[in-house]
Length: 313
Picture 1: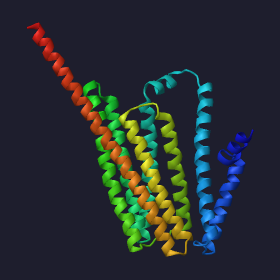
Picture 2 (picture 1 turned 120 degrees about the horizontal axis):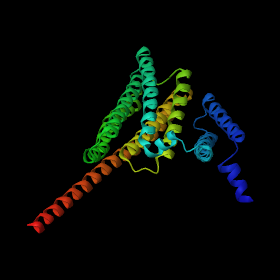
Picture 3 (picture 1 turned 180 degrees about the vertical axis):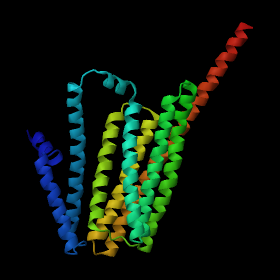
Picture 4 (picture 1 turned 45 degrees about the vertical axis):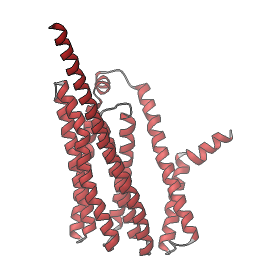
């Protein structure tokens, strides 16, 4: 009984209670930043409570997605579309990539135009980042379509293997440039005071990316496919970078302490930069391992064929 109460109210609260906690968290942060009390002792409590509330929101989203998925599986009829999705999970991911790429491009154009109008290098670099990220997703979508059309199993396996290295290389180039811009923004103190509508738009887009990443992971977690893994890593990294942009926007909008803003951006930027590089290195390692496994398999096939020829002779 006690465990059920703890789980119900501390880790998985009802929607109404969770909504109240989100509103309280927003109210506490507003009072802290609006009254310029960022360094007060109770400000730390507001930060911890806000982080706890954010974790509850993520847990609730994951739980709801799993619950709705189970309901859908029970009600779902075994029709041709269902069979096609089960047989070709890549088709579902290609559609998801197309939607994500389109929204990514539109939001990137919006941020870039806003940055150029406001003459802000930082805002313009965020827009450029989203457009480049859209290009990376488009290349992944093109590679996915090439793999689906390929009939030769050897060439299909080779293209899948090279997907890890291709996606890792493009993500590395894009994120190294963005990491440099983040540290320049922090070090040079670039202008970062967005209009409230821009911060709200960034918040909605960030939560969209987080939810999309969770849904993609839940849909494809059973499949060990290079394209699916690259898609998940790309979504995860873009979600973390969007969280960084959201933090800089909120601090620039509400915080009146430059030192505190700089400290928070430096800590979060370093953490996300290291985590993103870790995921990119994971793609390279995965690609090299697959390449090594294929080389060993090819050598074994050649060795067996040579032995069979010797026996025939």
